[in-house]
Length: 457
Image 1: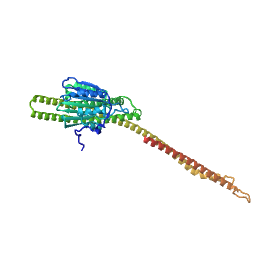
Image 2 (image 1 turned 180 degrees about the vertical axis):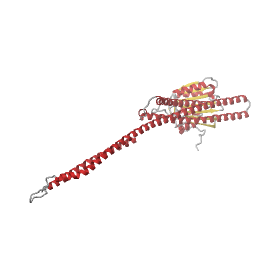
Image 3 (image 1 turned 90 degrees about the vertical axis):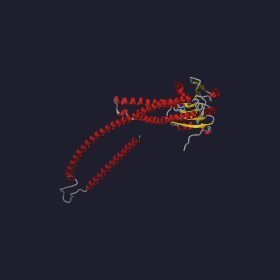
Image 4 (image 1 turned 135 degrees about the vertical axis):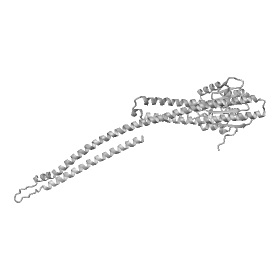
């Protein structure tokens, strides 16, 4: 069984998953004593060291929020760099994992490369119980992200790291963190922001597919179209790509929807933990009874709001998946209609060819009857003609003188010439017929190769 990772120090194998390169990194911080979010832009190792010494010196204080937005590396071969390409040095990252109590499970989430979310509740030396959440979005679409969140109940502090943020995503995350106010202190708020960004990404792709489909459907519905032009090889390829893209997008939405259902369960599990934890504290110390009740009610209120928003997003996903299903179904219907039109046209053409062939067969039959009549007449008159020609020859003398022969002595010349000419005629007929047969066979082979080539295309 693949057990969850225990709370052990990061190993060299864990660090080996990441690539380190110092780039500008945004850090957001909200303290209990501040009403606004503090933003720092750290660009090198020295700035990070100064930030650790100054900002993290008060890490033992309660009710603090930290978010490190690791910037995205430059594209690799025109594709987004992996989220494992972090924007700090190795030494800075090792220190960050210790101070932010980053769970080693983030390495598993990043390595999976698909939409996922996981959590663990464990005891940690020095801080007591810590609750860790990891999540990521699919890498098979541009703009994927990963996230690790650690919540320390004893200090009510939240440590968040967002991996693979581009400039636009950093602006959106910062804007959402600032607009959230104190709600950002809810441990699952950053995961909610991650799924909000994922929704925007998938819905944007779905809207682009819908726009393409609308343009094609309006042309097919309202315009005059010719299957031989509008459904040629290129047009057919475009429709197939649109259909496959919609199917692929549905798969991504289903995967994210499953993780959001899992997130709903995580919210309920967290609420159960908070309730049991508060009851345990009240049983030991009733001096802060009202304060703890208020804290528990606040967590339940935030959890209720988050579950309500998650249900809204799930419903929006269901609507978009229905629209993508409509794209695939309507494109399939349109293509079937076009192929039916082409089949009807081919059937009509074959019918006309059959009529022409019937007429040719009838003409051939009439000509055959005429040739048969001519052959019969030839059979009747040919013997008479041959006998008449033979007896009209000078080779015979029907009134010979005494001592003369009826048959001329040159009769052999007639026999030789007749047999020779007959042989020449038969040979000429044989060679001409054989040559035509070879040419017909060659033409048939060329036609067969062409047909085979078309079948392969």
